[in-house]
Length: 493
Image (cartoon, rainbow, N blue to C red; front, side, top):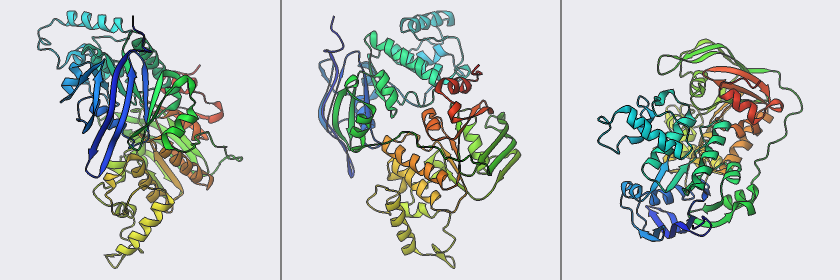
C-alpha cells in the first residue's frame, strides 16, 4: 500500500494566470501528497483563491500543467473537476435550510429524489456518514442545526460526489473552539482514510496543530513548501509577509477604566424574521478600555452593531458620551462606495464641510492632499488616490475605512469584525490601531467572531448567545474552554 508520504495527488507546475493589469499567479508550483492535510497560506491578494479556482475548473491557466494522481488534466468547468474527484467546501455554506440533511446532500445529483422513499434515503446517507465518522441525523432540517453540523453536511456532500480531494476555505471562521476541535478530528479521520485535504486559513495556530505540510504564496509566486513539524508560527508569518510579524498580546493599562462612554440599558431589537435578535442587553464600555463581544456568528452581533449606529429600531436606551467612529462588519456594503475613488471615500462623511467644500463647491486639491496624507499614514498600498475603492485588496480596503474613521474626532470606536478575511500583515496593523485608540482614552467596543482576537485585545469580554449577554468577565478570567462553552449556550460550570 502506498503511503501518503510518497504518492502525489496534485501536481500544479508553472501555473500562470493573468488578468487585466495584474498577474495573479506567476509560475506557481504546488504539490500535494495523497492523504495529507496540506495548508495553503498567503496574504490577501497572494494568489491563493486564483490557484484554487484553477484547480476547481473555474479558471483556465494561461500557462502550466495540472496532474491529478499522475494523469495530466484540463478542467473546462467546475463539473469536470467534481467528476475528477475534487470537492470544495466554501466558507459560506450553500444549503437549503428547509430541506433535510439527506435532501441537501443528494440535491442536484439524482433524479430520483422525489421517488426514493425517505427512510431508504436516510439509511443510505447514514451509512455514508458512519463510514467517514461524521455525526449527522439525515432526517434533521438544516435550520435546526448548529453551524458546525451544517459544515459537516457540506463535507459529506462532497464525499457523496466521490471527492478524493477536499478544499476547505477558512473552515473555522464561524465555529466555536469546540466545533473547531470536532472539525480537526473529522479531517484527521478523513486523511487517515486516504482523502487529500487542502486547508486554506489565516489562523497559524490551527495550521500548526492540524496540517502535515504548508505551501506559502506571496505576490502571486511560491515562496516555499515546508514540513509543519520543522517550522514555527513566527517563521510561517515571516514567509507570508516577508518581514517579522508580532501578534502577541499587548500589555494592559495599569489603571482600571471607570468613565462610561457607551451604555446600553435593557436593549431589545427585532431581527429580520420579526423575532427578537437582542433580548435585554445591558452593557457599559468605559473610556480607555476595549470591551470585546465574543460569540458565534448569527447570535445578534450584526443587530447590536446596527442598533448602536442607528440602523435598527431600539427598545430600551443607548447612551453615547461623545462622537462615534464606526468600522463596519461589511466594509463594502456599509463602509465604502466601491465605484468611488479612495480620495472620495475618505471624505464621504465630511464632504459638505470645510475644508473639503466651500459654499457648496468641492475643493478637489484639498481632497487629493488629504488622501495622500492618509495613504501614507495608514500604509495603504495603491498606485493613486484616484483608484476606485472596489479595486483594492481586502486589507487595503479595510485600511481606507480605518483611515477615514480614525482621522475624524471621536470618543467611542465601534469595530465590528475588523479583521474578517484579512491576512496576518493587515491584521497586525488593525490590532495596533485598536490598541493605540484605547491607550489614547477611546472607548472601544470590539465585536468579533475570532475568539483569539477577542482574547488578545480585550480588557473585558462579554459573551453573546442568542441575543443575550450570558456573562461579562475580565480577560484574566477567560480561557478558550470557558468562553467556548458560554458561546455554545452552556454554563462553564
